[in-house]
Length: 611
Image: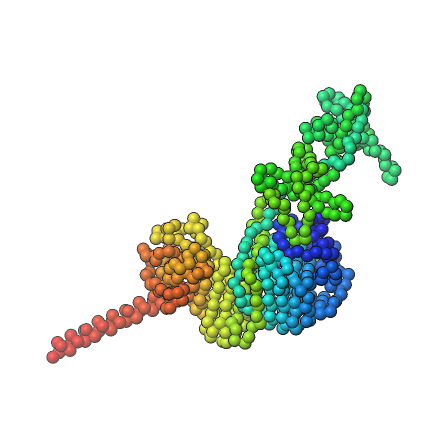
């Protein structure tokens, strides 16, 4: 496998020089033969793991397959895959890593400060896990576009900060954290110590369209000796004889001479075959005037990315150029389609390489094109580019009485029974907060949690549908005008305790009262409660069971059980549970009360009759 040349250039630049953490839209990479979640990739054919530290014009390779180095206040341990910062303070220091694995750690001792961190996942693993008992400040001067860049390259790369250290990451000029080509759209993990709310600007990278570009920088060949075929009297052919010394042999390559509008009077010689002898049926002919031609298997170029002029929608290619020891890219016009490239199977086009409409320099981590141009392609739904926007991120070490936070929002939303037992122990002293997918948060109040019998795995994930057309069969009362969303909790049954569940319904509903109802399998609706949506677009409900629920703009009636509790200011006062248990209890009490009253009346009447 050959790595994408553009990325290869960027990584050389990361080792040798300038670091600019910025947007990357490239989505194709060559992958190592084996993926690894832990440890650096420093052995075998894909031993490209490294840690590079750049300070001004000086660059130090702290780690690579060649070994380890250290600088004052910074050292790396291969066995634990840990880079330790020990009172390292340099606002100009940029740390860049590649293929260090998902367990790569930055251990903090004392007070530390750097400019930025960049990580390449490269189909191996590029997470950054900050831990230790010290502190770290990143990008206090806002010198870079992004303070932390995770160029995941097809991996699940995240920034994780332990609850034992203090970390402050100031926003760059564009965002505080950026990730590209990531398998997750939530690249920040913390243990409940992050103080700020983060906005995530999510987009998908492009599968960029590619074609094979060809151009000729040399003068065409000329000949007055051509051939005619017995089976094709209208066409001319050229036969090239090559003599090899080692191993000794002679080959004859046959080319058919065709005309191309883009080449004018110069013929395009399309290769038709290679032989040990001149095939039968070809007759040599001498022309009165020599002709010029380019060979189809000659010339320069290769597979290139397709670019669109945003104003005219005309397509171009981005062709690699290397001149005067400098790398650049030329945006070249497509002149004429030549066919299909026999090696790449891409469309083969003749391009105007010598007269580019624009040129640009490749910058590490930045695939931004000149103004007026954009890549042509289709979005990759399974990968994410994310800008994490906040003025800064402040992670403060957890104290003894802080809540216990569990973040399972990255797709693995299950918690095993043994882990729940540990959370139950923490719950004796603290609230337990579980962050799940779809921006759903479960909070269990201090001292309320207990084990649920015969449950081995608790799945806190949800499936939320905000389009009624995709929500399946709905009861008649649920119309498009009042439908907000349908929530299916993948955990079905009794929760470890009554949970306060925070749901993101969107800022469009801020200040509105919405209604929360359980939807049973037979279509019965149990109206549970209402709540005011806060300014950030969240409503909070409470329940001790999970199944399927609806959020609507109006209270549902019809075949529903009307038992709605209002929650003022998005605070639940006396909510109902997510099943029929309370209803049954109240009905039972009502029956007992009615029976008691009836018996009392009979007793009074009997006493009167006996007087």
